[in-house]
Length: 253
Image (cartoon, rainbow, N blue to C red):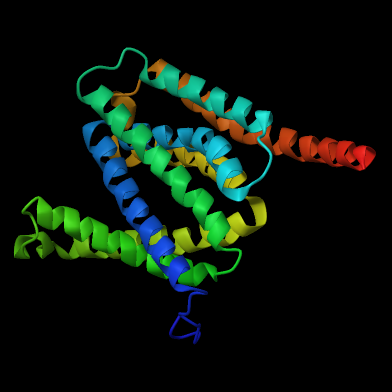
């Protein structure tokens, strides 16, 4: 933003505190997501995020003041069915990981919908900047409260520093900014549903890097295929649904 000489201004003080507040939600989302991954696998943590669409389907109409869509609810329930295949008969740490993952998905839905609202009057880069600031404050506060905020936290190898830099800039800040920009064009539901393609990438990387194929069973892959299939189903159903709705609205008028 400094290089591009972008403005750091926010339309109002109220909007500033709203964006910082959603930044705190983003921070909590990260913590609960990583906790889910820690207790289970990266693939499972990402699949739990697929339930974000279910929450967006009821949160977005409330926040954005738009009609409720049964099509979105139906697609979201198919995602939940996929999660059922993945998590059936879970217990112990796996069950705890499920709870953390599902709560993380709820938080993701909240900040996705509110970002779609904020981006109407605030530049995406400004939203990302202040939300990242809010998330940083929230996470630092949690670490300090747990008594783990000390010099040892910053001791790491050169390789760790390199990968954390890549993850923080390219995979987090840049990706977050792009999501906010795209949300303005496509809406929170379609964006969150499209993000469900993450399980595909995660499954592949999890197998190649973490050997997660050794701990994933057939039910997991059935659920993953179902969830990813909903993403493509949405691409076919949503445009025709909107077209029919537009025609119906025109006939009524």
